[in-house]
Image 1 (cartoon, rainbow, N blue to C red):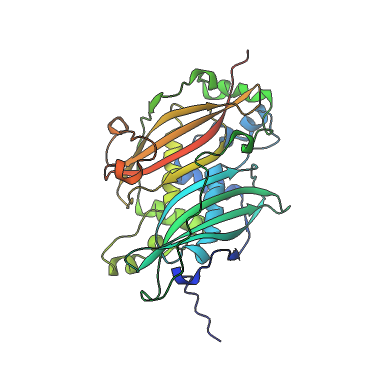
Image 2 (cartoon, rainbow, N blue to C red):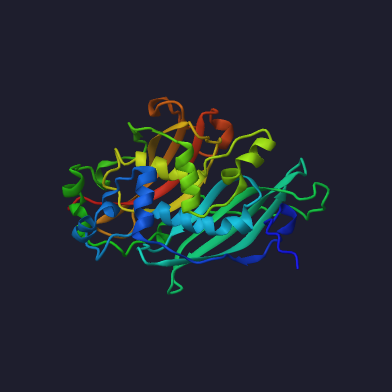
Length: 353
């Protein structure tokens, strides 16, 4: 008759385990407004209904990171309620736009496990999939998270670390959603830079910065129903000598909003190729970011191309101070003020030839 919902600890997971997460969530225009209030997003594609209509859509979709954060939140009670920290992402496929009124349901498969040498925790690797009310896949992703052990002495099996693709290939990118009318975005943003105007190796220092308040990240985790103790439970964090962590997805959302300046005509995120929360962010920290163009991607459309970008987020300094370590250097290549290293691909209109 025990009804304690204490979440899974590292030793509770098994490779191949499949979990259907409770409970499906319908997203609304109210969710969108709160997301804009938390991030300051100005994305033209999602900001106004008239914008979406002008760009060839029947209505405006929700922002991709809002959808990701909501779907991610569904997984927390089963995967990361007892997390030390969420470590990284790979193979994030944004497969279909999501609209107000759509309902998301999420399932997860455990694809890897690796106990840490301290034996106090381990890393859990999972692949999660979100579907809408028509059972259509709209989003899938791999993530790895460090999870506490319930019993430090508990025996754990041999480590299984899954291989992941370093880049989501072009043939897996969403491509059929855009008509030639997306070129009209320049009349909305009053900026003329399109896919053709970016070059690999180009760096963009985004001028804005945002201080993360206690209320911001508290509301964000509630909006996404992300109940991880590291974000929710200040008493538990203080008992361990720490402070509540800002949810990493909120940092991605804030940096994505700050990156509007310089990428004004971006349409949607097509994929997150890989990413890591390099260092923690706490209430009171101020976040800024810079972007480097890694590649220009042909997605098979004459009016839309892909831009593969690397975005570095920092705390308590300005974007101009950001150094871009070589790919693959990971956390060791970053100073302690770097909080995010994200490799992602966006859609952007091409200039008419």
